[in-house]
Length: 378
Image (cartoon, rainbow, N blue to C red; front, side, top):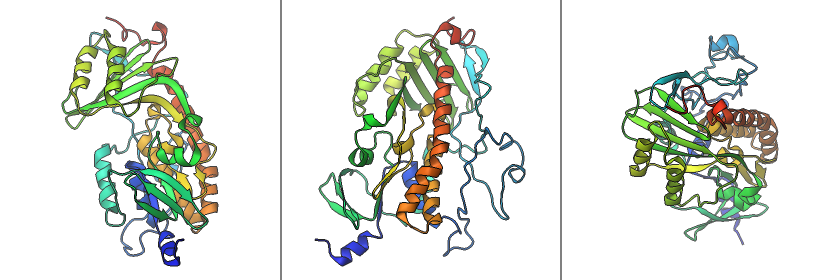
């Protein structure tokens, strides 16, 4: 039986499961609303405004003070994962023109784009002295009681926490343990993709090139003497694979793109020799609620919008701010904060997910008619 001292200690502990942006973002919002009492000179997050670009077309094109209801001394910090200017290329590597999205597609302007690793380093430095980080371990079991939630880890250790936040990605272990099997919430969008980062420029730095064939999409994004190689293909049916088996995933990509045009043979060689490789199906996570008992999901674990949204990092940070804002609004009342988080944030997520799904046919045309002129074949 847990002692009163142990129970009191557990009541002050929060477990954030995950090693991604949102897991680092949540501790940074502990000083949410009102700045940092111990450091009055620091800028705190006073409030979070979720902006719908379809409703405020001028956002990002004029002074924020003229387009958003800012209060005195408030400043705006925006995040955007969008790439550099997009250029379509032909199979002979000549420019075919810019990529055109449907007229009703919301376009977010890029104020500052921070490389993912740089952003993670910045966030880690901001919280490393205020949180305990545990690596090479994972959650095996969750046992919720009236006063706390007991967590059993892979190494056999056990600890009790007041709350558990699952920030562990689209294949969330926390979600599986607390909410049920992944299949209940995963919505397959008919595509698969891989991302490889190589330490060389394959195109001009600061540019992005796109190549399409029916059922295929290739993108090169160059920055900081590196290039992202994105390979994506359409599939009517889900392909069985182990998301932990990288060799199997590399084979799928190699087979899908064998014999394709443009620079694809060269790019496949780059992918084969690389040490940086990620593969998964293009999907969305849709859940009626992201909270249950003393557990909450944040980021891809609860509402992955798919890479087509271009907002993975942004949604992680916005979601963390939304959850922190709910706790501040309800003065730490867990039940009310969780209810607020579910109700107020769901409409925004639904809009983002709908927009991402609409972009898929533009990125991967299903037939020759959908391929921009000159970009499919020599």
